Image 1 (spheres, helix red, strand yellow):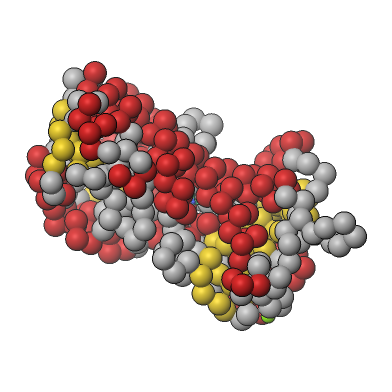
Image 2 (cartoon, helix red, strand yellow; image 1 turned 45 degrees about the horizontal axis):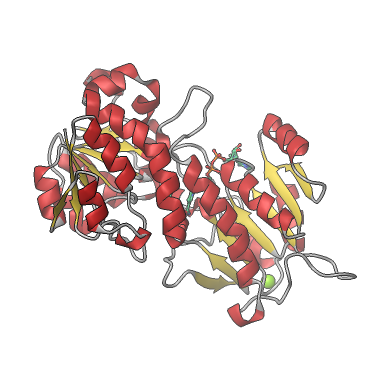
Length: 370
Ligand SMILES: NC(=O)C1=CN([C@@H]2O[C@H](COP(=O)(O)OP(=O)(O)OC[C@H]3O[C@@H](n4cnc5c(N)ncnc54)[C@H](O)[C@@H]3O)[C@@H](O)[C@H]2O)C=CC1
Ligand SMILES: CC(=O)C(=O)O
Ligand SMILES: [Mg+2]
């Protein structure tokens, strides 16, 4: 198969979807790999490293779309690419369609086969291609919270860990999955008092077992949330209902009761955000203020630590890219329930239920298309 590795064009996005090491594995499996010029530069991989791994360097995204059977990205295709996507072409990347109606419609129109990293799901319910970036974003969320609490950044001037004789900051993490546990680990490590909320009792039991003594796992409900956010210096939004729009848990009304100069980090913004006042921001302008509360809502947080993220992402995506390239998309889906769950829009049909529900579109079972 001819596989195209596109350069990221989202604002300040420096990741690339495959390292040269990943390319060498694809080439060893008999695939032709086209890499857009300078695709790896932001992550520290020169074109020469890709050539050494057996790839061909291509000058423009248009040429990659024209020549490839499968195109790969990190972030969702941007509007400038919509018309380049071809019928029957495989598009394999993060899509987050339940938060993006325009992209959903563009992918339907393209009649391409769009497989989303973030909805590929293992039998135990885990999301193997989301996990590495959730680890990164969770860890970063604690760092961003600490940073924006500093006064030069507009924060209320509280040190996350406090010091001898002075109370530490209070951090509330909503959602105790991969993002949540990673955010909580970092905040706990810095000495903050951390509440982590989830609706899944088994998950709370697990958190209770593994987290340190300054972490308090709590059953999530609106009453508890309202009470905790009034005490919070940092609130981190980390909930997910796979592939669906995030529920709005922190309301504008609750926000009014928060302390001025406190910080909210909505990691779930890629699925539309779990705070009522969230709107997506970029690394060049990451924050804005509502009701005196600093909002950080960057939808591609791992892009800021591209070197780490690119390696972690390739480690996870490569085995799936390989299966799709080796077998073709139909056979790969027939053989793998995990990849089947990744199918979001196929040949003009929406094949992921939560996406069809988000935009009131007809749903087609993928089994009818393979
Ligand atoms: N902004 C960014 O750069 C990035 C964003 N993300 C996003 O972060 C979000 C979280 O991802 P993961 O941690 O990997 O998901 P996950 O599936 O590991 O964890 C989500 C957790 O939320 C809990 N949950 C669901 N509904 C809830 C509710 N109403 N109240 C409290 N908890 C609830 C679930 O029980 C689960 O434990 C996703 O939207 C993901 O796409 C991930 C990576 C990067
Ligand atoms: C998961 C995601 O949205 C990201 O890594 O950018
Ligand atoms: Mg206020």
